[in-house]
Length: 500
Ligand code: ACO
Image (cartoon, rainbow, N blue to C red; front, side, top):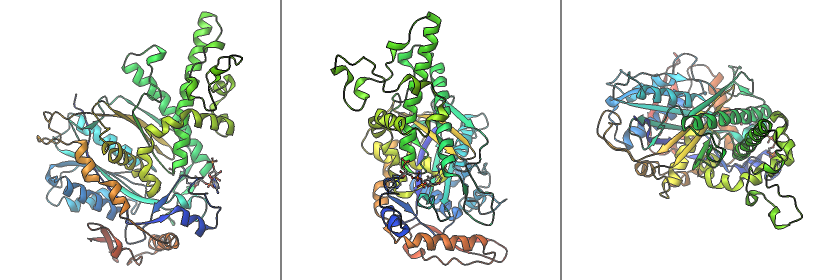
């Protein structure tokens, strides 16, 4: 196999952040609304001195520097973003300043809400996999500044960028590129039709339902595909929610990820029940005693087997739960609690590592799912748990809506395949050292919640301000070394950047 996948990764998030507890006080909402209600601890903030071009320049420059990548050895560079600066000129072209002697680089910018980065990533994988590959590296950049108008969505702002180096013989590889499934549909849950503002038009409740629906659809099809590829037919060996070592989800806010994660367990139970009913119909038998979707230990509130008068029925779900139209179940609180208790320990084991960064950085749209991967590498990799054979299932969702689920495998690179046409070997350990994520996040500066309003006002002014324009938001003195910032926009709308 070519073992195409992730060779290296770099992330960037602004040095300034706001604590959600302070934002609760500042916004006059009840305490706990953002910290407990949304499950978020902080959000990265930046004003008009940074834009997605500068953030992409920062993260790609740093990737090239930390991993000592020769810019001539890059043959594809593709960006995913939904924070559009220009309706024609792509962010990718701005990044070409980092490749001054190498104009022979494919790729452009891909747009579809939070999904553009994943689309760019799949394109890069396909290029490296193909006969068209010229032996060089691909770089995928996912970058966004999540900015919302005042109101309930504002605490889900955030900002960040991720650069991913893609090649063959990867330590984190899509070993079988067919192990993936997609859910694409036409919905208006979150979109940006108003060009006079940077903010989205968003139906929060609908966006949650669309996210659930996309996850369930991708997950069910993913299970079927993986089983078909492995020739699995008997129930006990089928792919299920506990069959991956780790999951990484697009994370608009932590509460949604927690709730969604549980729904994979619910889908497992529904599918198992449907198979039992179908089998029983073939045999002409009864399905009643065969509900063993979950072990008794999984059921919160004690072991029903302990009381001999209780009918043995270890599934926490009723037949009605498992057969209702799934749309009816999204607002059922009792069912939500059951799903939560069934999946809680699995969630803690498989998904909390990936969520650590998004909880303190906020939503980073296209970059969110890659921040999840970086977080997993930093934490599980840092503990030495990302050993060969381990798997991570990734779920990427972009409103509108397009979503994909795919599986990555941890493996020992052989050094034989030539990742980017040379003999270099990339490892998880090198990623852990270079990401250094926990320490870097701890070095950030907490700023007052008023700064979120100020930062967004400066961004809004830049957005509608025309040209020429000079940034006013005072972050330059507070940036991490190596950060690019916007000098200004000249009278011909040309943007220029400098590096701290
Ligand atoms: N203490 C504890 N919990 C609280 C408190 C409190 N003081 N106040 C409210 N809550 C809980 C609520 O009970 C609710 O809990 P639940 O999730 O168990 O139902 C939770 O906080 C959220 O409150 P809601 O009133 O349901 O929603 P809210 O008005 O806070 O808005 C929303 C949340 C819709 C997510 C909003 O932030 C939004 O529109 N965000 C942008 C859209 C988005 O991110 N969608 C996700 C997918 S699309 C994408 O990635 C962009």
